[in-house]
Image (cartoon, rainbow, N blue to C red):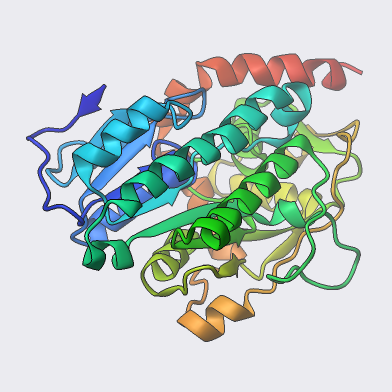
Length: 367
């Protein structure tokens, strides 16, 4: 399936391929980069449960945008897309990303995150090797990954680009493997790559299986808000637009073969995040009783990492990036967005997500 309001045409070597472009971070990349740059963008997404064309509705009519429904594991489809659009870069965000799902169904994570990345690397390598010299030197493969590949931190310390990998879930193991594949294709075959590892993203358009949107929507609906264990697990939170701006800098100015860690410098415990959301909703949508009354502590998930925190000094010093949103400002913007965008929320909540949440949490919340 290809979608564009007018015939999509760009000179060879100008378009960007964004895989997973209908997902949370990917759709933000597409929307924001079309707004602030002149780049034509080819959005590639197979539209699994979290892919949502509604997240791209505001750019669907632009002549510099085209959507291709395709699976990155499909070598034939990927070969056609590379040949047809002649990109100058690939921004690879397509992945299965939810830890709980990886525990219940790890096979899909191996398929998408490992086999899919391998297939995409091979198609990119074949395309890149045939480019004329000037375009060959300009081409980039930007692989977007996670801080979860590093494992778990204690009370002190931070992940750096040299932290050894120690993944603790099927999700993080599959992403760690994909990172290694990308680096191998650079060192063995010379493919010009950059890798970024980010902390927990949040913001508008996030699929409501993740902590922040799930908390917002359950609170609004008067449903129990599940919190794993005691809620003391700590994450570094990164507003999605700050992340997308960092990705742009790395793509355009990062050194090939390098890794850049991207964090928000906003460590928060899960229970603190949930309570802050409840307090914001008490202000914006007051009820007779506080929203925090809905919090329910549930059995912890297997292999739940205690703390993630990123040292993002390298990207700050080398590329001049800084997060623009504090956690307070970003969280308030996020809550307000979900309040203001009921149509998007209802369209997503009426699908597979609602069934999945019921299946995975109902037995815990009934105790």
